[in-house]
Length: 583
Image (cartoon, rainbow, N blue to C red; front, side, top):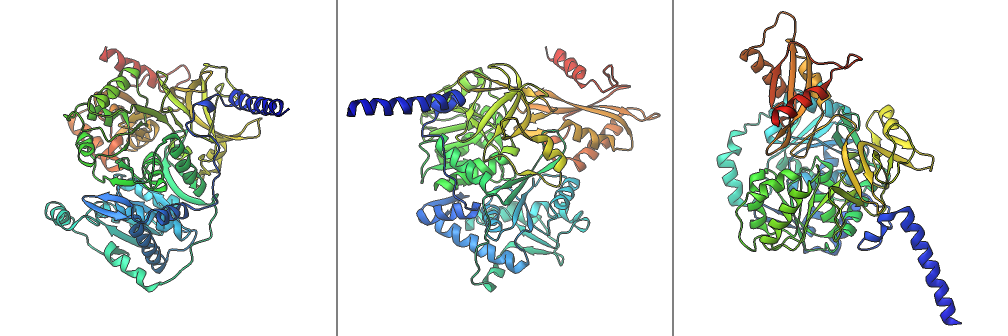
């Protein structure tokens, strides 16, 4: 009798698993389960629980200085107090224009603690872009690195900013490193203060005036972070992310990167103004209780030496960084500390992945590089190759609790196995929407016949019978250079705004190190002649208006641009021309 009951129970469980597996074929590849209970906590509250569990663990290593979780929590509260004294209120948006420093990350969590939103922007952004980002978020307060101060001051009067907190990468360095930085770099940064600006050390003192305050009562669905991206149609947009988005990502990544544990370390070189950097390289390890090795001024050529020096257990990067790693001279066991290596931002071709794996093994690591995929609209990551399974050219399987499907382009109809279509994503890391842009939000977040709201990525791919996803190409025009997204239409708009330019088209061309760079084809206005002087003027204009990573690498003047039958610029013909030149 008992045996019969047990057999029935086993059959029932087996049938349930079969149904789940048929619906979600990737289920069987998870290390540890697939369903997560997400606590109704803010980003700060999730990290505070970790800090209370591991107060003596180190949260950060920064140029030789270590900061424990206990100190991390104390400094978040002090910074929160200082923000309140400065006039920041619940619901405000505070801009952070910083590289990877303890000050930037502590301020990020302090902003969340008082119920405000952190708007993260690239320190290398142009003046125009900084102005746009500040106004788009209606920021009244900004934390900025001193190197950006002069650029910021040129546009500050065109914004609503009332307070500028000025920090330096030398804040939190040990005494010797602090002096060395000041001697070689810092003393050159002359900050001319005005009534809106305050140095970080003076700002943090303001916190002493507010002794006690209650943490803001915010929920998991409340706005927490704004990151900026081109969106799925290629024009600059603010992407509104919630507490749940970031906390879900951290918990999902923890399961996928088993056995990540408290006390492990990660080399955090991906920038905090990027979803992959902030979500995967900062928030996730801090949730686990790991030590984050912060690198604010990163050069790909330093990648190997940094791993050798700090001996991290985890690294996350883009393909160009791993190219640099392969060129680094290392000893037999210099990579023995590595237990998890993740690549995102672009695809890894099988031959290149094989080279990385062989390099890791040759230098003492038993792990293999795992390729992933995501976009800012899904908090930076939503798909990753499992630890013990790999398929050539695959970007992996969905993270736990995430759903993927491929739909036939231009429809909501699901494609067949291995049939190309648009990649769509559903799950708790999908954004709340685009800032101030309901029309674009409604185009990107679409309710399907299954009743779920799906993120339409604008990327083409397919799925095999086991649920592995294969990225093919982008529906939208996009250039990926060293892991950064360059949006040709935006660069074209900037070039065409130059008084000498009539038309412009931008394409991506191959680059040995960066994978791709931008090339601009330009038609000058009637009566203007191509010359070195004209090229210099347009180049200078682009460097003033665009972020450094999106500057065109080459400029070519044309009498006219090729067009399609309906009169649109045939940029694909120009891509074909360049491909033939490279053959």
